[in-house]
Length: 296
Ligand SMILES: O=P(O)(O)O[C@H]1O[C@H](CO)[C@@H](O)[C@H]1O
Ligand code: HPA
Image (tube, rainbow, N blue to C red):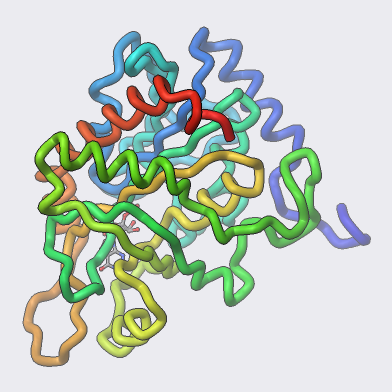
């Protein structure tokens, strides 16, 4: 209850309970959390010493309702570094509040995580982008946030962060540079790009007029996730790195016949999941070695 108005946000005690439950169930103490987007659960495959929890068994955790989101929390080790992977994340269009959508991020913070890696599937708006390109997220547009659908609306809990957080450095520059270097080493620089991700609430894909508007606004790709998690992560002081897989070209022209669907999105995710896994795994190994970029 705040100012005599009922608050539907998760309480500090909710985050605490889940954090303590997980810390009691696992000996892993992750420093890096990876959120796997649609069809990208394979990102956890490279981890060793794995321990898996189903979302429905974790107190206070929402459950995944979308195809391509397994609904598992996987603890494991990569390059000697303890990590936690979310195989599947939550969306506004599933009917969850943004507090529920971002719930795991604050739990990770309370567990001791300092770096969040976000991944997702998105539609390419930038005319240069091709299906299968991997976009390093340089920045984002929080379109639902403009309309008041923002995870930090409501009373601010200073134990997590300040009332008015700065977002001009949302995606860590050093990690973006490192990812570009890694893509050259792995020989996949030909389909690695950098760009601006725009979040819409979904669940429908964009109309042509909407897509054109998003392009004018400066969006290189569009999806229905990630921005709330990144916003909450920055608020509580996490370092953020993001990759978006371009699974389809967004129609910007009335003469275009192709129609996007979720099956196609999952098919392209499956096709590129292995490369994405290599990039993420190498990035985790390297950032754990380089202390200068490990300090927040
Ligand atoms: O952002 P993720 O969950 O990776 O997936 C994207 O793909 C789904 C639509 O096909 C939506 O959930 C959209 O956000
Ligand atoms: O074209 C798209 N639009 C919105 N979200 C998406 N997620 C994958 N592709 C798309």
